[in-house]
Length: 180
Image (tube, rainbow, N blue to C red; front, side):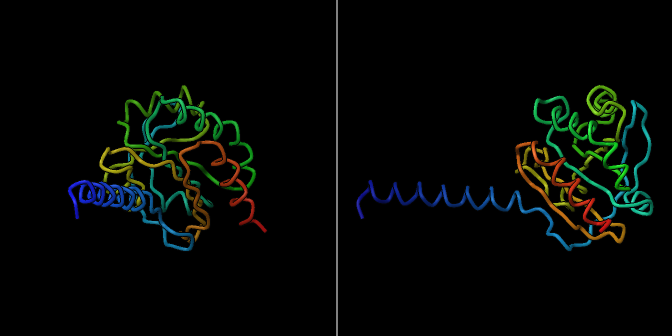
C-alpha cells in the first residue's frame, strides 16, 4: 500500500466510526418498551412544581417530548405547535410534557412565553436523558424525540426527527389510536 491509499483508508475508517457514533446517539427506546419512571423539576405557566411520570400516567397517556434547547427556533416552533394542539390532546385524554436539559429558571420563562401556559416543561437531567436514550452526542443536549406512553407505562409510539414538524401530528394520532 502506498501512503495515499493508507491515508484514504484511515479517513474512511474515521468516517465510518463517526457514522456509528451518530447512529448510536439517536437510538431511542423502541415501541413496546417500558418507559423509565422518573421525577423532576418542571414548570407550568411560569410556576415550578414536581413532575412525576407515574402520577401523570395514573391520569392517562403521556406525550413525553424531548427537545434540544429552549428559545431556539425549532424548539420554539415545536412548543407553539404543541400549545395550539393542547385542546385536542386533552380531548383524547392525554397530557403532554416537554423535556430539555435547560435549567428551571429558563423553563419557567419558556413555559409562559412559548408553551403559552398550555403544558409543562421539565428538566431532563443526565440520568433521564440516558434512560430515554436521547443524548445528542456529548453536548448535553437531547435529540428531538417524542414518545407516547400508555397508562400501563409502555411506549406505544416513538417519533425521532430533528425537524419539529410532524411531532404533534404523529403523537396526537398515536394518542387517538389508544382510544379505539
